[in-house]
Every structure is written in C-alpha cells, then in structure tokens.
Amino acid sequence: MTEHAEAIHPPKIETFDLAAGTNTDPKGNVREVEEYRVTDFGLYLARPAPGRAQFHYLESWLLPGLGLRLTDFWFSPGHELDQDFYLDVVTVEADGTTWRTTDWYLDLITREGRGLEVLDTDELLAASSAGLISPAEARHALEVTYDTVEGLASHGYKLHEWLSTMDIELTWRRH
Image: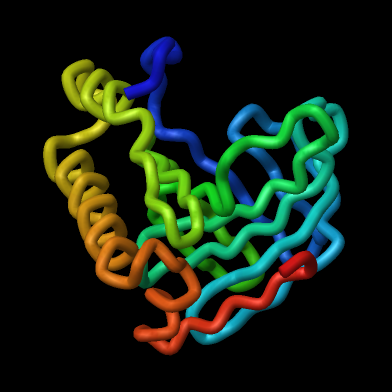
C-alpha cells in the first residue's frame, strides 16, 4: 500500500495516437512522441516529459498479452529512485493507429535481480468498494499482478529473462 492514497477515482485512460505522433494522458495533456514502434507483442514509445521535475524522459512498452505497461523513467539529477522499471497493470486496446490503456490502479516497481514491490492495492480496493470498477475487473487486475510477481520471482527478478520465455524481446534507447 502507498503511504498516502489518492482520492478515489475511476480508472485512468491514456491514448496513444500513432498517426498524430502524440500521447494524451488521463488529464487530457497532449505530448509529442519521438518514436512509436509496433511489434507482434506490443507498442513501444519514447518521449520527453516536459514539466516534470522528477524525470525528463520516458520509454514505455504496452504489452496487451500480459496486461502491462513497462516504463523506464530517465530521472533528473537528485530525483533518482531505487527502481529499474515501473509496471502498470493495464488493459490495452488497439484500434487502427490509436491505442488506449485503462490503468487498473496496481503498479509494480522492479529492482533487477533483487526483488519488486507492489503498489496501490489500497486504490484498487477503494475503487472496487466505491463501485468504480466491477469485481471482475478488480479480480483481473489482481490476477495480472500475481502472474507478474510469480513470473519475475521465478526468473530471479530479471525482467528481460522472464519476458524472453514468452518470445518478448524489448529494445530500449537507454539499455
């Protein structure tokens, strides 16, 4: 659980418009994307993060088959965190050149070869209790989280080793 839960809110929806080269966050902020790349297993994006003190750039992979968005934040000096990747539990939908994610509250922070942390269980439970998501959606989010924890643990908390067992080979600008 997080130390301070956000106010209860519906699931956050984010849009990735490949044709326009933009990414629209849940608050409606539109940002230019430097690179989109579609593969058999997902969508890669890389973009600057203007206006963010903690990080100045991000790279993400949307992996529909796993129900995950994997992000590598490029932290600004003095804002570094003890994490390698940030995983959001999501549903990914693609409609032509438009992709959308629905964020199911739960997040995982990976620490390569050392472990992981599950965050925001309190948000998922609050949203479920408030009727903002169905019991089936909450159960699905938990199942994705359990499967991810099990997969990472069984591969020594090495993300790329776990993904390679499913023929998922991620490429990054920074790694």
